Length: 374
Image (cartoon, rainbow, N blue to C red; front, side):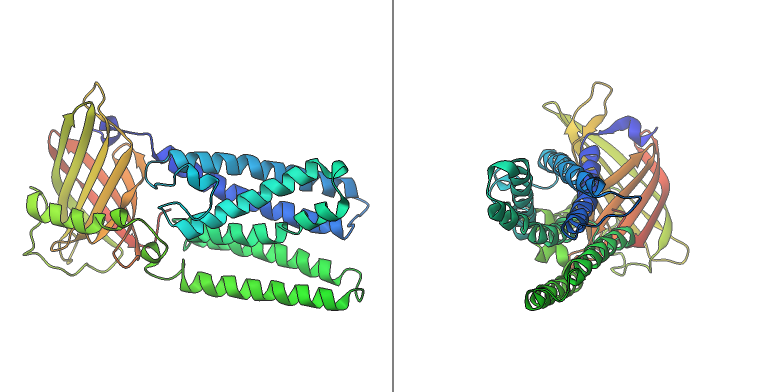
């Protein structure tokens, strides 16, 4: 039996869409800011006329808003994180990482003001338009902090490389802007350069001590209900799982990465049009202590006996603490599933399961490694 034949996912596309559109929006916002700086220094060459810079700047800004709209919509529709509609308008009121989500709301509001004033440029005073456009310099770092603060993959090498590239691009354009026309307004230019350097240093220090450090999920304002799933799942596995190990097993997690052959059971419970599929089991790698896992998938029951997954919960750990790591499924293809987990201190772990289901029995392989799959 194939796992994907039993479970049909409806939340994973929303989760992937939220991540992808957020990343694209950041790149487009960076491009828009850099092009805006080039417009201000009146950059032009034989192969690149000034109207091309203006066109790219305008179109990148509009595309940023479009991708942000999809980013926001998918985040609200995804049932995993309780974002809430009200937090789209009023910052810092969401129950999910309110400060860092609120920074994204502020950045979006500033971007909307920039777009609106640009469209009405011929009808508003130039000084007012210019003053609002200075907000672009605040909008961009707020977006960076929002992405790192609320994102599930700030430690990913690809995401870090992208953020560093965006920062380098804006810093390069900013230095060009300060050097252009020197030494006119030298004091103002030096003050602006010093302020920009302080912002970069402050954000870098925050990132190293915050999103890139262990335990960020708890410190960022993740709802207690999500953080408590680890303890609840661990207690559930020890008290009632027919396939999970008991507290008599080892409490030490084998060295990562590890690969283990697994056996277990699958159980489906349907009631009131809803269904829950629970897959639990254990395994032991070569020369390693036993480990345990538990996968719970919930959603509307399907006519064929399966479930349309709207939420998932994955637990993994040593025999005596099978709920030490908690998270959810991020990829499901056939009998292969991948999950992104964190422990109670916020340390990330990637879990991959290759499952074969025969009736109520489960066999297959489990692979765990440090770091996030997201």
